Image (cartoon, rainbow, N blue to C red):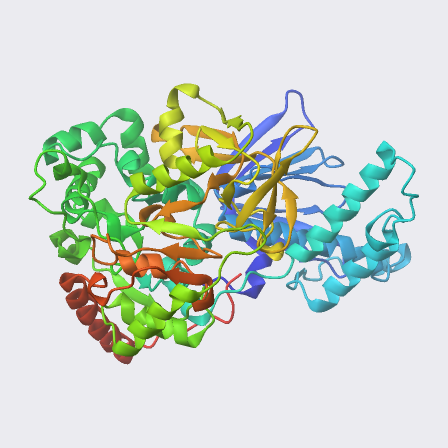
Length: 626
């Protein structure tokens, strides 16, 4: 199976059909259904519903689409004239989004096609076969754009003729909102392309193989993971990560929470008993695809214990009880921290997952992403690749030492200091906040369950309480507008608070001054419970810990590496910067740069096996994954 251009017109999902042409209304559910966009010889657009023993088609005219839960693989198509409602569920999210976009475009441009008169319809051969709808083309997009421009309100965009002194009425506002919505729909139609190496990984995931993909910082591992999540059926796919914040970024749950075994300190038998609780057991048995992000930070002993638990609770002796594993991470970055032994036996260090017997059992098909997207400067990329494996030449040392003279401060925005210890970063932030003049303004998070505020503190990148002052150095912790540079990690400074609502106004390095409003984070907890937190998407950014910076891209960063204590920590810190000119190292020393010897040996074996596999079995690359 592959996801190609034409499959934006086909969708595999579960369907519940609700018929309103009888009293009471009647509901029928099919777990396996296929939706297809088709046309008849008169170019009328239909939705074909192919069921195990039945195929129906419905004219796409006057329909209403509800897509509030599209991120959960759900949508509803209402056919008022036919008194029918189709409830779509368990659809791969990216395919569902692509399918609905294609349906929208084809319906929107249908009016521009020549109409067939009634006489021609009566004389036609009704048995003539139907045609499948073609994917969206550039011609379709041009038609759609022209149609929106003709129908655009004179109050929208550059054509706004409303006098500046006149207050807009509700009709004006509604027209502007509709115009913006139409423009955004047109913009969203451009496909989210993957690189050729990323397509191969997605194809392997679709083929049901256990896979592990890795790559240096900035190669798009998180982006690729989200694409994989988008092509798998959500009801049987579980996204997990080793930390709460990493899990939140992919809309998942921590690995420990999903497993239902607490910290994993207990024996295997006790862990099996904990995982056999009804609400946890249901999740284990329903899961067919298990994603683990930041696998490098998962302790090898815990990974092995988890594999044994999976086999026991699922009653299946295949590795991980027959669940497909999709693992992602870079073992050259931060190593695992063992929850099992950290409290009472600090001499027992954590092990890597690849050192466990379970790793070999799973027969993972491995891939390494090579193309770096975060840094564009070839010199800096080369330096980081050497730092990653613990190699520091005299030339590299001189180049990094020279960054001490970089002037990063601009427009009142200071460089973020990366610290090796979290408590150091917290202390710097609080002391600098106290030094600022004026009253602090407190923003309290609105949580769906205040009893679980501490859990949400760990699972989301925002605190339950945030104190800000004018002049506070802050960092954006959520993508608000990628095209304008308002992305996770963007740096800025508080310039004022809005008169209405008191929201902080931030001047960013991207030369924008923007009022920041509360955003919502959705977190999945044990037993399928969904928690939400609404909070201002900012953090104090005079300082940040290296551990919490993993996955971020920082506009201007300063670091002291003298207290680095883990292998890979210096590499993580350095790779947060976009370029050498946006980086300042206070006390660079080559002795602080090191890679774990076990990781070096693992990657040597890994790359040798990868070359042998690719030489024996060339992988066919699909033309384009949507």
